[in-house]
Length: 349
Image 1 (cartoon, rainbow, N blue to C red):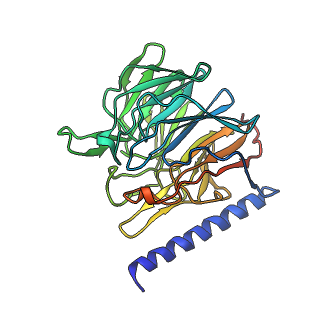
Image 2: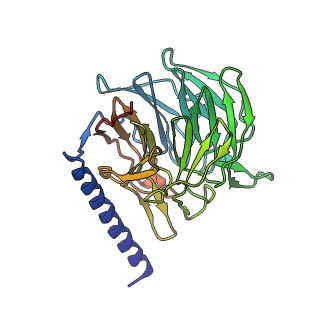
């Protein structure tokens, strides 16, 4: 049996175990959780990022062909189950970081054309959904691509990602942690993340930030070097705590959101020289108990999907059905928009 065949067999067996575990967990909680369909995404893409603002969902980005980003902005209204296209991003990038604060959307960095986009851009933007208007902000201290952004206490923390080498001939994985103050429009350097990584999952819960999984390698390497490491950052003390319970399925490049006090990580990718694969895994991390729960798998394997929590329901949309890479132009993206109605948990909102 060839090495490639063996690896494919291991992947299939792992997927079956994860699916079975998810079904057992859901059954143990009572009625099985089931996925339902919502309005499909109008412009199927990968490397999309979704953020809930004012009860609506804003999905931005897209990789395009060969990294020629389309700069998409779509608004989803769960009350009408309709998508509405908004003004494009002022600078069309992919792998940007974004988060919500005070009814506005903040977007940082991102890659220009190409897989790693020469280490990213320094641009920062504020988007006001009420007026469909963009405003330029103070530039990032360093170019960044594929970082994560989370808001705590009126400050936004931009962590990890890719940054350019000093000679401009490539990128390196970053552990940078820089704080943006929307009121002052200024940046401050904070304590760096112990594990440098990009394409990570993240969430902010109870005043702390959790960076989950991701990968160690640069953006254009032939393997993903996925990790399962979970690290907690406390902005109040500017300290990184002890490593938390590891992610059940090491992966990178998927969707993530916070819902009912838990951080959900869905989809993702795994790349080797022999195989480009996407994940169906959906797993939830509870910071209060430092535990993971395997959830019912996504309806289809995807990477680069957008996720959000709207009214206690978990939404995932679009993404590519295989890992990214040079073959992107030949691989289809899905328009699928899937919804999982989560049970309310005591003490959460």
